[in-house]
Structures are given as C-alpha cells and as structure tokens.
Amino acid sequence: MLRPRIIPSLLIQDNGLVKTVNFKNPKYVGDPINAVKIFNEKEVDELAIFDIDATVKGLEPNYSLIERIANQSRMPLCYGGGVKTVEQAQKIFGLGIEKIALSSSVLQSPKLITQIADRVGAQSVIVVLDVKKKLLGGYEVYTHNGKKATGINPFKFIEEAQSLGAGEIVINS
Image (tube, rainbow, N blue to C red):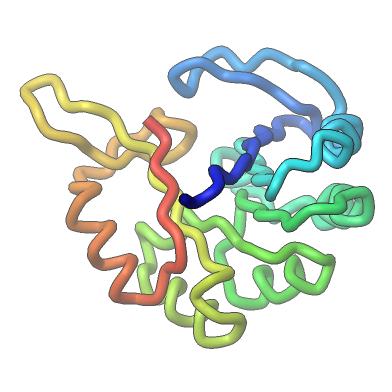
C-alpha cells in the first residue's frame, strides 16, 4: 500500500504567509521562513509555495525570498508565482527549488510547459489550475486568485498540459 504524502501549500502575499477561503479575504498568519522551519520539524514530504501577488500585480518572482526559503528547507520545494519565462524558471531552479508551478502563464502560452520540461524534466513542471463550478453546470478555469474567468474547460486543458509535458497537475477549487 502506498504511503500518503504530506505536501502543505503556503500562500505568500506581501512577503507574508496568508490563509484564504474560496480565494478571498487573505489573512496574515505569519512569517513564511518560520513556517518552513516548523514543517522541517514535522518532516513533511514536500512543500509548495505560491506567491499569490506576483501574477495579479505583474511582478517577477521574489528571488530573494525564494532563496531564503530554499536555504531553510530540508524537504523538496515547489514554487509558483509570476513565472512567465524559461529563464525565470532556470533562475529559480538555481536557487534550490525542485519544482516550478505554472498557472496563468501556461494558459496564455501552453508551450512554456514543454520548454521548461525539455530543460529540467517533466517531473519538475507542475500546472496549477484554479477551478470554479459554473452557475449552469460544468467547471471553468480562473486566474488572478480566482477572480478572472478564462472560459477554459479544466478537463480539456489538463489533457493538453499532460501532452505538453506537465509532470503534475494541481487543482484548487
């Protein structure tokens, strides 16, 4: 029998750790570095860090914060937020991150999945989809922290992402 893997997801906003409910009302809950130290002690299997400001504000990834988190972590890390290019992904991998989470950028340019996967392997490319149920049935992918509807069917995009080389798919709903 497979052992369940524990992979906490940390949301970063304004360089602080926040908690949201239904993509809304972020509440500050602490320092992300302290959270990493706690999860080190708890011996979680992996840690996912999502900067929920980066895409919304059009920011690049905060490389300084990413490096500080990677230096403290004793578990594999996944980072997402503001990654739009292969070069940004390469820089983040160089800081000690094992996986890159892509969302809005791959909805606009799905080939980014293949471009990054060709350089680092599919196991390091994660596609993250924020999904909401539509009023009249079915589901739709959203961006910008669940605020911007895309008109994209998540099931069709998941198939496309897999064919382009995504190693994992994360659904936020």
